Length: 337
Image 1 (cartoon, helix red, strand yellow):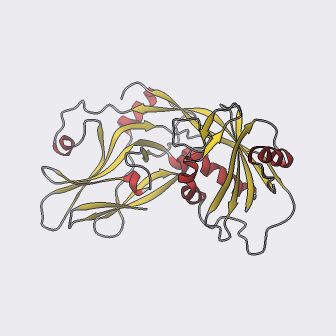
Image 2 (cartoon, rainbow, N blue to C red):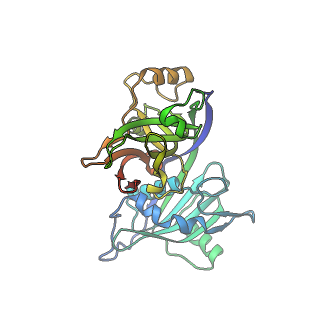
Image 3 (cartoon, rainbow, N blue to C red):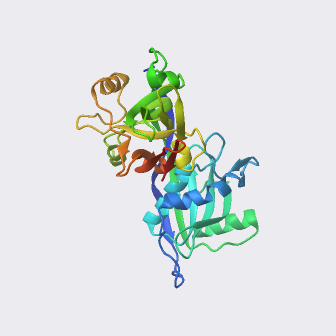
């Protein structure tokens, strides 16, 4: 393992302010989502990535980005905003103000829940100089930018600040590579493998492989840290190999509707009773990697050639099993949510 590197991770603070005006909810209108907030967010990601923002200083940005440019939202932050609206009881019609401590301006967006509670519409999104927001100031600002005077019933202000997290980079490609490892890229780490029997005989191995892997220790003093535990992250591939060649492969990211090659996290160790609060140093982590048994990540799913693979979702706040299904006729591998 090489020396650790520090990476800045954006985390949400508690809701800053919630306000509601009278008027009530129309008869037959859903007051809470009927699907998880992550599903609500997934349905609008594409439209928000392409939506331009005119900044107060005359510059430009987009509402949402999956990393790299001056966007106030990413997929994880959008989920956080929708979850905060639910916690605040502000559905079905709400203005969300997104504040980032690293920026001098705020994002104001109107979010409306559909009648069946299964989708949201974000019909207005504007950037404005930071201020103390209330119903009147949102109404005036949006009117100045769009030329339309909006109705403002509920307001949720969601603030984000920065915290530091640390990852440790696994050293790969330094040992003699034999067997399955000889068939994999040099920057690949074999996480787990098991023998599988396919029609026609022959020895086959089903393996979970991480490309460009890192280890991310949890802060076990927090509820989220204890729930998720310490994880490995990288491009996660499930590989089916014969004795001399790889016969099928699947990218777990694509099974999660993410772009191919997207880094995904899988559990490595559960939090231990003696794990220190905060981020441990490299000596502690090296001891864990030497002495602890990794959690299984390829468990039988109750039928032949089907397995469960746990992955971290919802911006690092939840674990979800995906199904790995081997079709021996190809052979091929499917990743199912």
